[in-house]
Length: 190
Image (tube, rainbow, N blue to C red; front, side, top):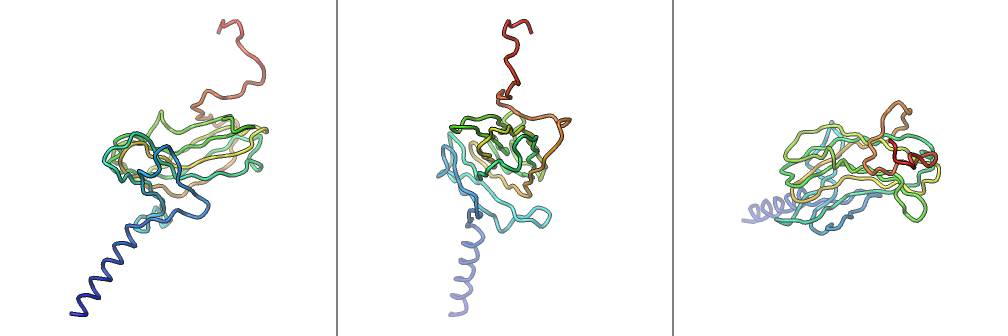
């Protein structure tokens, strides 16, 4: 009898451990509906042997999104073109998901932004590499980035990286906030 109770207790503890997610160090949960999602590392999933983070809906319907994100100072990237890349897979994403990257200026004014909305992850997919490329102006004050899930479903992501690329690599800026060097097309002829 004691053996069965011990086995049952061990099994329950293992299930709780495997189903609980811890937010990784230096990351935080955000979005307009963060409490509608379970976010953190998933000890049951890896990508090429590397840990994976997850965002999973816990409500049957969600009108909003959750993001697992990080922010850092832009100093090492100021004045450069930067590629953020990472791997993502999805399960039953009814809305959309993707990585996102935002460059902020004074007063938290966005200078560049891409959330992959135009090339969103939907449905169920295997691991795939995604990239975002943005210019980080000298006047940038903050970089914010992460992964997001809008609506229901589940995503995993892993192996994020940042690298400086040359100007021959096109930006993916979806914001239309590319700063012009000077006023342009003021007569609307183009």
